[in-house]
Image: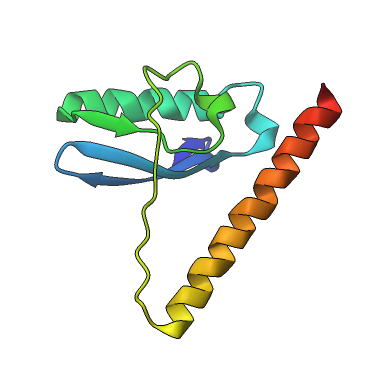
Length: 115
């Protein structure tokens, strides 16, 4: 938590384990956005991480716009799921397949509309 005159103006919640830091949540008081409260807190977090000797500081997957000045690389992420051969598990598998197919159609339609 970053405090200004005893008032919290920015926060970050991270997971740290064996030299690896993973950013979970961060935010700031919009009243202090122009002063760079979020950026100042990130700089202090990196300074602390370097002093501790961490190997990796992962800023998390969402909201890349606010992290763009700090990024050194962006890595792809994949998810693999296994479903048991039972009825309920196969229904869940089918639902996820249909959802992915449905949303893929939404993306294709929006690309055509913007072209």
